[in-house]
Image (tube, protein in one colour):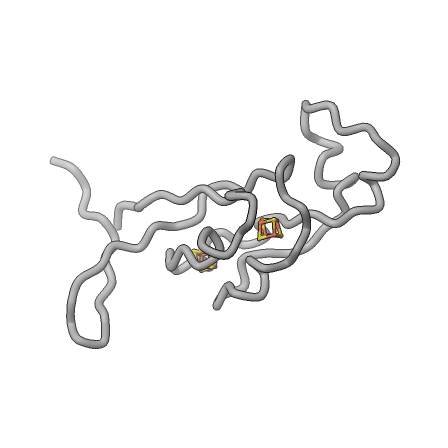
Length: 101
Ligand code: SF4
Ligand code: SF4
């Protein structure tokens, strides 16, 4: 038997299914901060691109990139699944998934 999905309710009592953030593609992020501003929770933080990608296995090695900021997921468990971040991102960096209760 499959697990029940986490569900929410609108003010009018209608059911809706939140879709929680699972990933943020830092290789496409331009550090604009829109997702940080729109998020109603404490999910994101801006970090140095050089630091964020130091552990990655891609080939970001331009010195200019080290001075740029990039968004990171700091606290995924605080996400309420509203998908506002996805809607405002100009680069479609965010991935979301429904979750089991
Ligand atoms: S889905 Fe909503 S709560 Fe979750 S990270 Fe995006 S804006 Fe924040
Ligand atoms: S909205 Fe998109 S491009 Fe802008 S900081 Fe957030 S993830 Fe990066």
